[in-house]
Image (cartoon, rainbow over all chains, first blue to last red; front, top):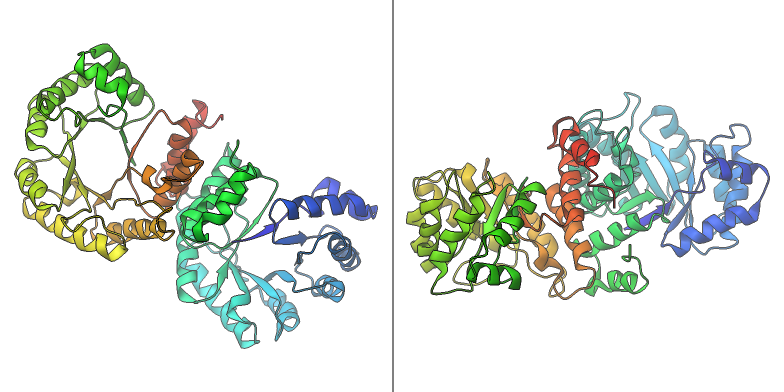
Length: 265
Length: 265
């Protein structure tokens, strides 16, 4: 499971302020905290600053990478912002995210074509959000075809089947989970990743629902997650579910996390 | 999801003593506590008292049913004990459990033949414990064939695929989970049920592992569980996972549990 730490997002008030004020120490603390908590990628998002997004993303990548050895997930639909981030990024970045929306796809495909970049591919098209397993598979088919047709290795693709709120339709959870399973089966070597907090939108006990849903998604094959790595219970669920799913040889990672106190709630 | 409360088991010291001393109040308290916590069946097991098992089971069924309206899961491989329990049971009992072991199967099949009893069918044969999905499916095939051939409705069968410890083999979790999924697909209308604490045998943080594994099993279709209903976090996982799996219309059960404080850890 790769964990993409989601906290450096300009839509969070403290982060937005730190970006505008060029408060490198504040950003670096959040980056280090996430890396220490087990993040594999640090997401950087400056999407609320429409005009200045490229320069902000560039600064974020430099600032984050000055204090961590892990790569960034450059989080924007804007090719200029992604290019600005990539220009200074060390190591292999992740692009968050391409989709099947025509404009987004046409703009971003050239950036990832024939590279080793990791790419999150959202199951979204100009027809809107998918609801069923079949909706998602159709979009995934087209996305994977375009990406691999542009010489992106299937191993570098993280399909995000998009979680929809179960408060809207109580079948949305299983449609998502079954889509994860179907995508992992259909494209050997591919990955799936998502932010799953949408599942609990409009309901109480959201954190607990999100944590529980994470374990369920791991059972169906999910191997990437965009989460808050400082949510210890979420990380505990991920570590435990990975071990239970047989993805942790000799439970080494689970036992290490246990010794570090991760399961001491 | 049906929840089978496991606490009235003579192998637990307090319960063994209460059975021997005919301490009805003690047994009834445990029965009521489990029913109040959401159990659908109360398991009764007097297996440690080899010679006196039938009379003890009979007393347990009478004692439990004097204070609860829910049925018992009569838990014995001994047909005499099961008959003794059934003789006084009100409503439709569950038999825990038949298996493909020749003696057990031949002894118990006549008791459940052509009845409306619910039956837990263990994926165990004289060749021992199954390890792979295929091992389990072979046994499940034979068990379902025998049971339905004896006029037991498929809707009354709860196949227990048997959980094996992941500390022995880290693939055992997924073999079990995939067996649940395969059994639910193969026999429309059937159920699966199990006690799943074996998964964490030999590891630390067992309760947390068991709770996480429950959510994963629900994602794969598990709809019966032999658990301690007084383990609030386990029950919280079950209620949340059921809602997330779309088995809780309008999240009514989840919201009721929320209002009762189930998620206030």
